[in-house]
Every structure is written in C-alpha cells, then in structure tokens.
Length: 137
Image: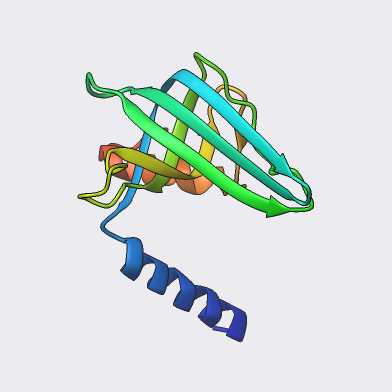
C-alpha cells in the first residue's frame, strides 16, 4: 500500500467515524426541484431544494444541496420533475430544525445517466445485488 492509498484510507476512516451513523441514501422519483442561485461579486452560491417520492414507502424525502464557490459558477446536473434519481448524503442532526432534511453529497440521475460526483457504476450494481441477496445474470 503506497503513501497515497494510506492517506485516502485514513481520510475515509475518519469521515466514516465522524458521520457513519448519519450516512443515508435513497432513490425515487423527483416531485419538486427549486434552484436558488446567488452571485455576489466574486462569490457564487447554489442552493437546490428537492422533494423525492421514494420507490419504497409512502412518505416523502426532503433534500437540500448547498454549495459555495469563489470565482466560478457552482456545477450541478440537470434534474427535473419525474426523473428517477438516487441521492447519497447525510441525515440531519437530531434536535436541530433541519433534522428531517437530507444533506446531499451526490446525486445519480438514473433517467439521464449522469452523476454530480463521478463514481464507478459497476460497484453500485454489485452492492445492489448483495443487498437484494439474489444473484442477477
């Protein structure tokens, strides 16, 4: 294991240790999307509020993506009503006012086959197969 691998493993372990109990993912159909973009002289802010109807269950999931950047516009993928998406993020801290809102870390748009932060989709398929408990051919 090289220096770079050890460094990555250390950061992954510390992130999981800090946020492990709050990590969540959900998938479903987009019911509502609102984009709020604010530009100050050199400072760009993007806030995206989403409401998602999960594939399993009767409730809804509220999610928020908030990003700030200097000099450049904040990149975001196209998401609209009716798209099938998968969200990965952090649940809110219990006791806070936003405890029921999911803080988005990554979005996979299954309709347009695009993602916010590029990941290896073959690993995603393997994890789905392991979760379901039955092999797919």
